[in-house]
Image (cartoon, rainbow, N blue to C red; front, side, top):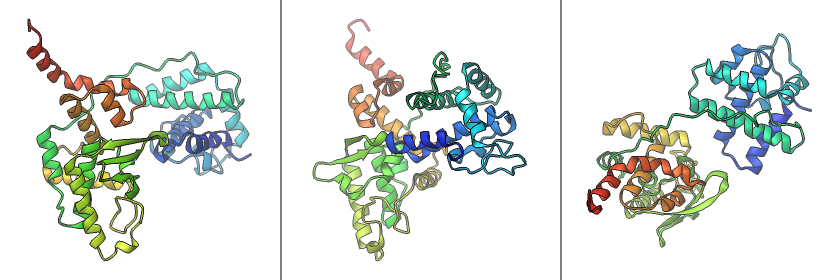
Length: 336
């Protein structure tokens, strides 16, 4: 049995059965690596942030410090780590959460780590590796309700007008930004788009969302025009034959664009437009939802467009539309 094969089996389950994204699976792996380090008694390793970015499932040794690939003076055998994980009880989980609370983690981060452990032990119970769920009586701590940031229309206009769409890369960037705001897709969904997913005739795109769930989303005319201009310049490029034949958005080498590259491009245009540098691609998704609701879209429709499984996830945007509701109330109520 390979080291940490139990965690490795869980991560494979997330990847191949639950279809989690590589980024999400990586976060789960990091949380579990930190938990393993804590169980092994090495709080120094367990305080690390970047040390747990790699999956513990792929490590071949674990040092006495509990960190994969560390300089080992004493090698911890796999049964020791795995047995401690299996034997962890509710009290140990509570002590681990208390430890996280001393490390200046936000409530949302602790809640995420707790969710990782819940999913992991639920998996272990289903596979018969543990008899009881150590988190069954542990509640998720209440989190601060943070309203999502969104852009006003003048800010959106300034951003979308910044790329130079007379060049191939500039037209690509403009098309990406237009599509992000026009459809509200996640940046991971954006870079996953293929030519076959674009239906110009019906003005829709087919999106592969979380868990490989598919949905369709309408495109606005400005987004359609931007994509068509990008494709025209792409077909005219001398290197077009060597580009990825499936990927809609490609980098300068003709390969599918990464989410990190989209973020770098956005940062560039935010700087050029003089906008807040903390704006992320997800801010455009928030902006899409907020402006849809502000302009009369119903919550269920926005839920479908965003690909939210639960309506409660979409409801956070109603907090941002209070001014519109107040206006509607003032206009419609006879005693307002």
